[in-house]
Length: 296
Ligand SMILES: O=C(O)CCC(=O)C(=O)O
Image (cartoon, rainbow, N blue to C red; front, top):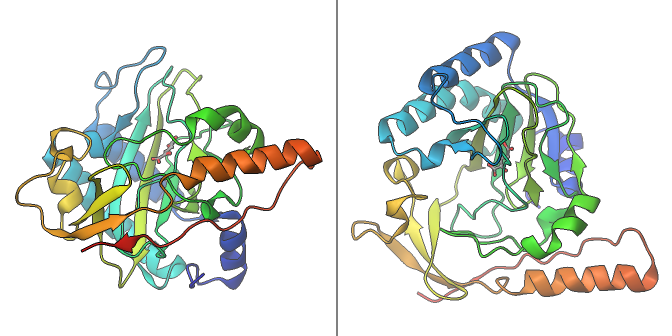
């Protein structure tokens, strides 16, 4: 794996586990950022109650608000990215608000964001309120599996394995101001908010400085069109809303066949079967990530 973290010990951990936890923001930065997010979404704007949904800023219908968030996060995180991830650059910044009763997100990997699928994209997940035990859950080493191409609607690779993934996963203890830096291909989930107050987190994405940003739009069973996502693509388009449809002005960079589209489920079942047969508690993850083939 090419260098991700400047710190060699951190790099080793990141390679084997798929994530590291590091201090990022000072108490003042943390407090200012929480106030700023709360100002974007004043109280009353977030619906609480059993099964209520997460406020997920990329799905915010307000382009102005999506831009404001990016403008807030970019100058704050750029110096930290330079310090922690020397060959990477800030790519995007979002926030999530999980009101009391919200279920959060189930098991998933994050989307492929760059044209070269051997690139690593790093998610910086930083809770602004104390998540306590309701923290991010991850499956150690699962970044070496094929990722689920979710664009725009996930096919649900992971749903049949929810129990197994819950069993294999761990909740990441985190102190105020710390962030989890994880490979966007790591299998992870959030935990339902059973507390009585909203949980707020930001998530910043860093990509290799020389990477070509793309939106991989499903264009068939295991086929994706690579759309140029440079500039403000992720702000200008509400890709979880109506713009998830191919827009005529988007610039296509070609198509790829995804060889992993169906292998994840097969390989995962194989792994569980092997474990059941041998009674071994843990099997080494195999590397399943491959390059898609470009079909022009
Ligand atoms: O904040 C969370 O609970 C999880 C966020 C997450 O999984 C994501 O944005 O991909």
